[in-house]
Image (cartoon, rainbow, N blue to C red; front, side):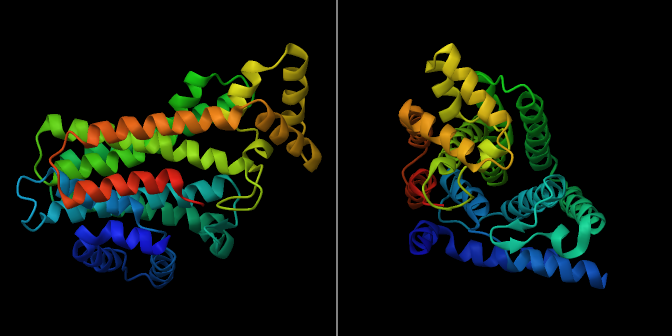
Length: 329
């Protein structure tokens, strides 16, 4: 899978290498403890999919695809990484999570107080980077994503208490929680490359569609047979209503629906109840329904993408979309 991402990254390999070095430098600080934590964050970075979306979209929407990308593109990618990392550090505190991507979380190693302050620091570094360079248009785009992410999380918490999420509410939640971030990556890439407002909005909508497909794929992992990406049944244990379960409950009789909701509400310490919910969803066609929805969003993203001029960057974006829906973790 890594070689697949390497091939996708080919048109922007030079920019990605340059970005990694610049981002590493931007994380340095004179405070010894903070510098140690920043180094830890940089070392455990993931697949770098978000910066890839920024740089590939910038290339695909640039007036001269062969010209060097403006510095604003690098700053935009760094701004997204800083603000997103801040939200992840805070999320781990809220969720009392000790691991992220197989590594110890910041709060597990340095406790909650330091983790919260580190999140605040990352947030301020992102804001500082944008303000020092008058990147107000980029800051507007990323600020919208951070606001929507927070609103989506709170909406999900509110609905989880009553387990009354409809399909429309589910789509609202994942659009805010996940799709808004990828939409900000593609919008920032287009805006930083000097694209028109109409093109920036088209790029944003493209990223939003990709993000919807990405999150549905993530939700499907909850029904797998092995611990890939996240432990199987974790969403059910946390009482998160995702598309496969929402659809299955819509098809169920009143009595069956009541039984399943009871198992979701009262699954603490009962692995068999979680397994019963998983089997119910599989037998009700919930997985097939969610897969069809995922591919529908992918196709909508591809339709928007093909409005952009043909280029190596556009081809890589298409491959990156397919990677998000075909990944195994």
